[in-house]
Length: 119
Image (cartoon, rainbow, N blue to C red; front, side, top):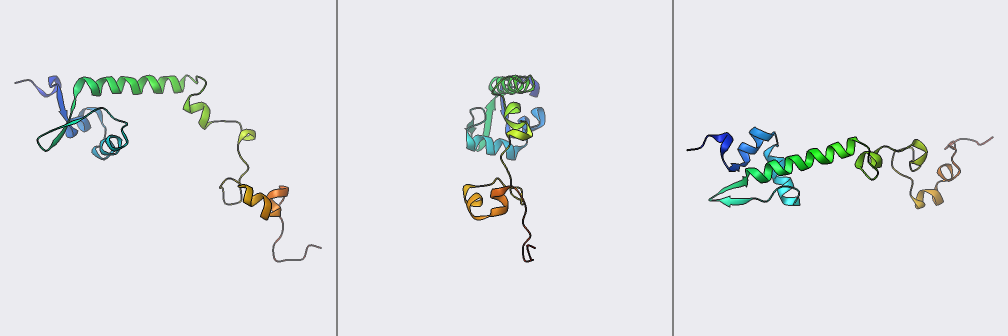
């Protein structure tokens, strides 16, 4: 019998223990189609070790590409200049066209005093 590190088929528990991917995350990624192909062996969900290892290597390559700052990477999309960001309301949500037409303080870029005299 092979020891666990040489087994070709892994259960969700073995993937959790060896690769640190929580079972709940595996379940979510399977449902979204973001994880490796799987199948059932009786009542257990199992993965092929070679596919898990290939998937991990692919994730590492993606992360390295993101860190390298290649154009179009997620890092470029997340971190832009403050000037490039959308204007936001006082609540922190992006300003919508509705806000611009109904709230004069947002539309003009200056705050107005509510409930008091404008004098």
